[in-house]
Length: 137
Image 1: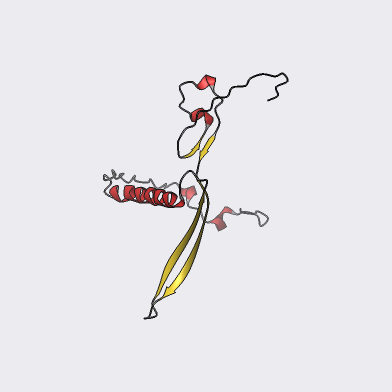
Image 2: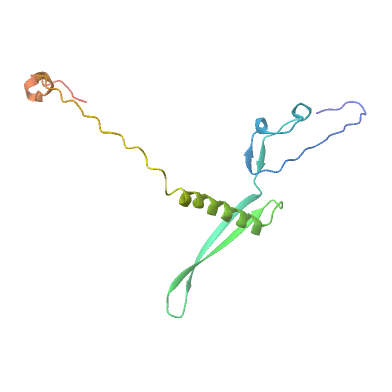
């Protein structure tokens, strides 16, 4: 924007809370025509790194230890991000466990396939008397 004269400019912002990615056409503001809608990204986690380390005990058994480094944009703490991600994963697999007893699917009755008994459908390729230059692909 360019303002050539000495004018007063008033700007009003509206912020939404959300998760994931939201297109401007998916916003739910009541006053849509008064505001410039923008595509939004609600992703506070900027980077995640992990390291797996072997741990040996006195009996020479090997276990593993995982180190997570989580960087966020400051809107939530790394601990909150980890807790939220773990809860989303648990909820996803809980849905799979709860739906293990799916209603029985109606079994389709097998259709009987008709076998053609016409004489020209079961001819050996040698009997077709094709020239040698014919290429089959």
